[in-house]
Image 1 (cartoon, rainbow, N blue to C red):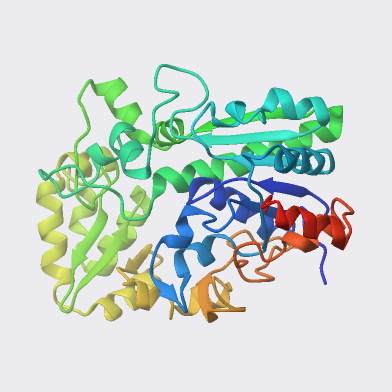
Image 2 (tube, rainbow, N blue to C red; image 1 turned 180 degrees about the vertical axis):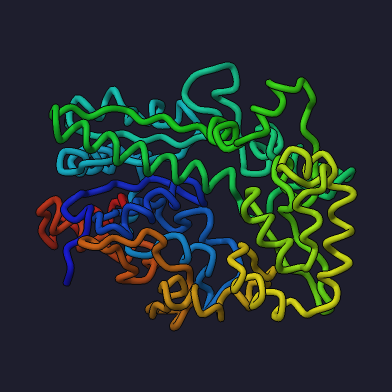
Length: 396
């Protein structure tokens, strides 16, 4: 087996639902030993989210592969003691509780670094561990609304629209993983751990891309613009004889190629369309002219012609089409795992391709507490009698 980039890194995962589990999934895919610590009997909240296969949540299974599960009742002193022993042997702790929760348990960063100065403590929360909103609860839809992304998403002239995937959580998960990797590199050089504080709201502001630049420069508040790019033209879906195709002529050279393909070379010297700023200014005139031509052929026909001309394009795939796309399949972006209860399950693969240390989906998400005894034995060195006593005391 090819060694993986995070092999040997031990992560204690106290997270639930999406932002935190997504971050630890990225680490697990890269080879980290992620130990998911869950509340006895109920576990991660998302275990109760449908759809289900044999009473197992497909939602949970898609976000918690490659991890081991242990249950611990952290409200009990003995469970806290066991957790602190685990921290001594760990590299990373990740949690996504509301700020202050871990401190109430006596397990905040200041306490954990006393037992392991090299520990990297990553906290992903709605608003972060500072600021006036810090203690407020948040879910994806809340930070999408507050972070501005909804205000620029939706049909032109329509109401603000939530982005389909939970980008509030997912971007926080990605930034949390990046923060942990950066902290690991710092620790490798200095021996010192640190706290990584990632707020979902901060992450939404960070991905606003050109919306902030447009407002700062023009003073105009960006609004929903439908499916077209607000700064590049043509860069939107165009109607075909049997559907739509996304055409993205992202610079003047590509626009020339598009004009040559469409048989409209006269547009190249047309003052309205000669440059991207002019095309964007006159988009309401250009779009109908292109549409008049694209409606004469099917999406597949245009895809082949545009590919040949070197103009970026693509069909608007439904999810079933994504799972059948030859490029997606060739890059192993749809993988199948065998779950001990649910059986076969398809899910997204690992998007980061590495020449020496390729990550992989090695095992399915664990059932609740599946590895409790295994972890207590191999990580903490407890014997079977001690484990049995802990079980009787309802520590796990």
